[in-house]
Length: 96
Image 1 (cartoon, helix red, strand yellow):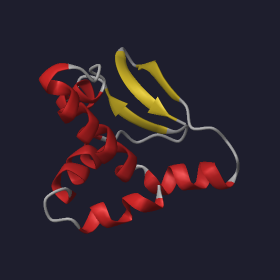
Image 2 (image 1 turned 180 degrees about the horizontal axis):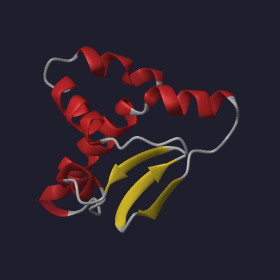
Image 3 (image 1 turned 30 degrees about the horizontal axis):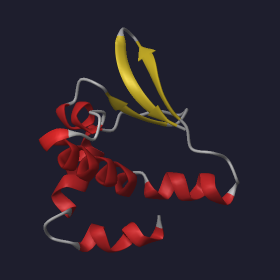
Image 4 (image 1 turned 120 degrees about the vertical axis):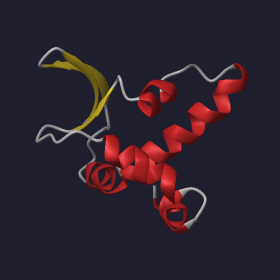
């Protein structure tokens, strides 16, 4: 995760990180992103065809956006888990 630090300062990549971070939903039980958000939907596409590269870039932006939270999980030796949950009738991607 520390290798992603430089991407925050990259003027070409920082806007994507900011857009992903703006999609984040407030949560006290992990990090949540709405599955309906276009960037999150694209990030869940299988890495094949012409969209594979775009999905990979968005996944890297998600990792950069949640870097502080995942570093805390690594220090406590907790695995980072991705799950989909229903929040008031809306499907969200939860990272905990």
